[in-house]
Amino acid sequence: MRIRAAVSAALASAGILLAGWQSGIHLEDTRSAAASTSAGTNGATGTTGATGTTGATGSTGATGSSSSGSGSTDTGASDKGSSAAAGTDSGAAAEPTTGAAAKAGGTYAGSVVQTRFGAVQVQITVKAGAITDVEALQLTDDDRKSIQISNRAAPLLRSEVLAAQSADVQTIGGATVTSVAYLNSLQAALDAANL
Amino acid sequence: MQRISDPRTGAEAPPQPPSLRARTFSCMGTVVSLTLPSASGADELVAATAVVERLFAGLDETFSLYRADSEASRLARAEIKLPDASGEMRRLYADAVGWRLLTEGAFTPERPDGVLDLSGIVKGYAIQEAGTSLLALGLRDWCLNAGGDVLVSGSPGAGSPGSGSDEPWRAGIVDPQDRRTLIAGYPLGGANSANGANGANLALATSGSAERGDHIWAAGAGAGAGARAASGVRGAPAFRQVSVAAADIVTADVLATAIVAGGMPMLDRATDGWNIEVLAVQAGGELLATPGFRR
Image (spheres, rainbow over the protein chains, first blue to last red):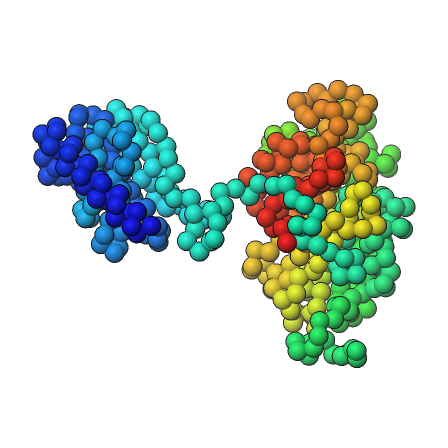
């Protein structure tokens, strides 16, 4: 992850340089105007990958483009070629100024929200004041082995479910039994054994 | 192997089946069992069972459609109108309508013929109220089973009332294809669950078409029960049996019923929208389960 972050940061930096070079806009200006989230080099539709995907705590990355506590912002400024201008330069620990940038457009990362499936963070892309894309930046919990985004029921073999023997259980669940059916039920046997 | 008599010293002893005492009574067309650790004492069990039985009988008197003189029957015959019904009737009706909204119609308090029928929620409500009463009596460790729907508190292995151990109650779920065998198990309560502290599921409810599935109307829609007005599942039910473990018994009971009635879409909605575990037995006997049922 670290390597990937570094690579993407480097790519981003290169991208910024290129973009800045081509469009002739000073990065410094952009940064001061939109505080690290560039407002876009070619006018209104800048997209930056300014995100707090530090893969770590919920405190970092709580807002768009905030830097990680470790100082190295591994914010991969959009490595997607689609963005018109890559925004964040790595190393810029800046606050997001959504107000200024919102008008021009850009991408904004939401705060990290704790759900019962783990931490989730979402990023939106705004163009001309409208949300054009929503992307999940973070869908996992650090201390879990797998990313579980859903609690959905999945097919399972009978040998894969929690097993139980009637000798080992204290109660029996099942579709409602009638009083008559109860007589022959496992629950009746358990109750009788405990009378 | 010699059995060590004092369960309080059981920490280092080999695991033994907890010593339990159970009593049963018949109500709402089924049998209700209350099980307590033996250490609670027989008198306490008798008293607790009496409290639970009185509560069940009272609700049955009001809500049974099998009694011609019940309030529910008089409502069904339109002898009284809902606004004039008892507070309890109106409250349960409101709860049931709320669940109909939450389940997008999969659970409904009305029969296809329009008659108000709260039997889909009354038993769960009775179990919940009984559980509240048991806790109010100061009982921390118990297992209440009403015709296959289970609510527990604490642990079966408690050495003495109030001491509690970490051991959960182990519930077995019957195989709908062979009701003499179990298809799965599920731990309920345990680990100081009497305080509701650890978030363990305390309730397990099961619905199915195998036994007395007559209150699940969508499931029977294809079997000659007539066309279902609401857009529901038609034809053969997708699930023979659905078990839902939840923090409370009403949620477990209602959602189990809703999933049987609403099929796969309702199963997905339920697992997405509620913090529950589900084990569903499909028509062909295949299983679907949420991670909590995985061994």
